[in-house]
Length: 176
Ligand code: S3P
Image 1: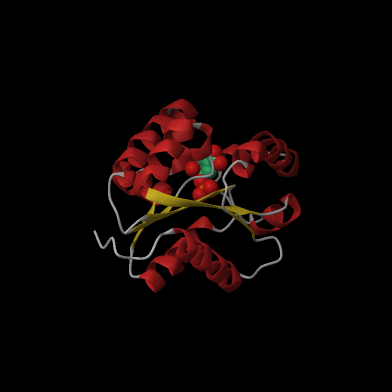
Image 2: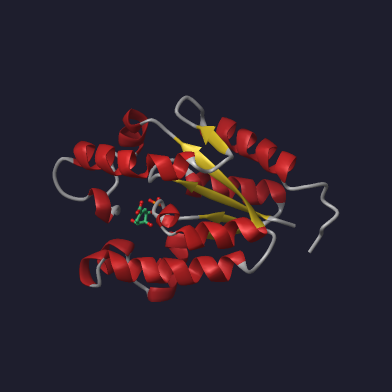
């Protein structure tokens, strides 16, 4: 059974939506950031602060390879997974990649109380978010399957992703 891979900007809902989908589909839920935190015993923000983003990207890359090698998984990726085309190549080889999109106003609202996104830390979060989203938008938009969550509830998003996965995952005869 193919993996279901969620990509999208910070605050797009990958973790909460992925967790519910995994329960609905009877699949294993894997959250990349949470796994990195569990395995290193450190917060993502601490890894960024001490070793820097490039080191975090190496950890993320190794984990993506590992998770993509399995099946029956719902994988919630970190927002920057799209920066490395090798990640997308591996994830698409064994899974259906679905992008969760949201307009910047909604992302800002969803992230207003967040304290663990190092790329948005400090002053002028709105400017940082808009700049980063503008840089990355072409990468997210290049994912063929996308759900615009801007005006959707979590439950509606779960349903929309479930339906897309059902349509694209094949007829279910592959039960690996
Ligand atoms: C990042 C997103 C974060 C986390 C790290 C970097 C990014 O994940 O991986 O802070 O580059 O967009 P979420 O998308 O789960 O917040």
